[in-house]
Every structure is written in structure tokens, then in C-alpha cells.
Image (cartoon, rainbow, N blue to C red; front, side, top):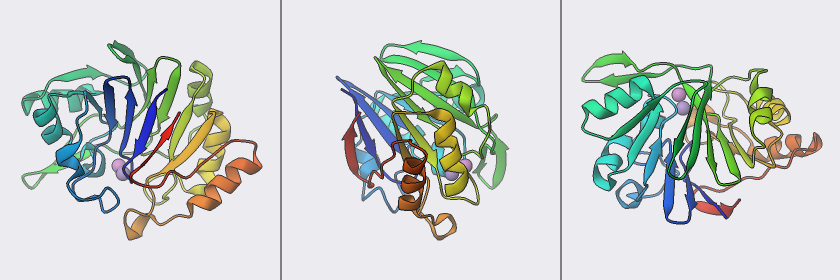
Length: 229
Ligand code: NI
Ligand code: MN
């Protein structure tokens, strides 16, 4: 069994046995995550899909505190190493075998900039990721628009869960995310990246209903709750 915990926005933890993989740990300043979660999580690995502050989030600080290894595209991994973190570099289309399972980066249509000391730096291309732990395969789309090759991601491994942004404006909205779910054919689809801020308001129930109408199982996971997958 793998436990999936949703912290709101795009922050998700996968826990199997004694290993926790934390994805896009935007916790401090995330109004859905609750107070001081960034100071209490104890991941073994942190996956970062892209450099935007609502995804890179607290990755560096948490990695330093917990000694977690950061897994990300080459540019973010190099940045993390320069900040004194251990990191595993990789890139889109590539997979790496980790002690807990397999990580594969997928494409995403978005940006990957970071503002630091008043300057904007670009840290490679944005990514999605498939994290495999045993027979459990979780696709986290990161931030992306809809693309037809999502079909290939669902064909590569039988997806247990697909985590899809539905907040519109910066990513897919509800209508496109419903189509994405039908491309991916995951056993369960869960909406993310919505209602964190006013600019990404969306109706997760409309998303779930739309998925179900197409025969794709979907479920809202409330922030700060867990499901067994
Ligand atoms: Ni983004
Ligand atoms: Mn985002």
C-alpha cells in the first residue's frame, strides 16, 4: 500500500514503507497546507517539477533539514547542489532507478523561472513526473496545458493515480483536464492546483463529474488528508 497525502496546491507526499517522496513542496505560504507543515515533514526524497516558487517552494530548506535528496531536471538539480543539497539530475524522457522505485520526467507546457535577489533566472524546462513505487505508478502533471502525448504516458505504465492541475489561467482548466484524464486512463484521477489563490478558482466537483461521465474514476482529495492507493 502507498499513502498519498495532499497538502493543497500541487504539494503531494507518497509514503510507502519507510520512504516518503514529497512532490512540489510549496508549504510555507500555501494557505491550504496549514501552519508550519514545512517544518515537520520528513521526506527522504523531494521531486520538483519546475522552478516556479509555488512548486520549488520549500524544497531547499526541507532538503537541508531532512537530508532529503532532490530529484529534478538538470538545471534545478544543479541549482540545489549549489545551495548545498544532494540532488539527482535527470531530464524529460529519462528515467532513473532510485532505492524506492523509478522516476521518469515527462514534458510539460509551461515555464520554469525563479526570482532570486531581484533577478529572474530560468531553470530548464518544466516537467511532469511519473513516480513508481512497486506496482503503484503516480503521474504528477506539474503545471501544464493539455497535450495529446499524455496518451503515451498512460501507455508507458498503467497509472494508479493521475494528479492533474485544473485551476485554469496558468495550466489546464476543468474542460481540458477532463480530456487529459481520458488520455491518461489512470485508475484514479485527482484534481490539484486550484483554489489556492483567487486567480486559480475552479470547481473540482465539475471536474470529477466530467471525468466520471467519460468513465474515468476521479476523486477530490481535501487538503491535509490522505488516501490509500
Ligand atoms: Ni508554474
Ligand atoms: Mn503553479
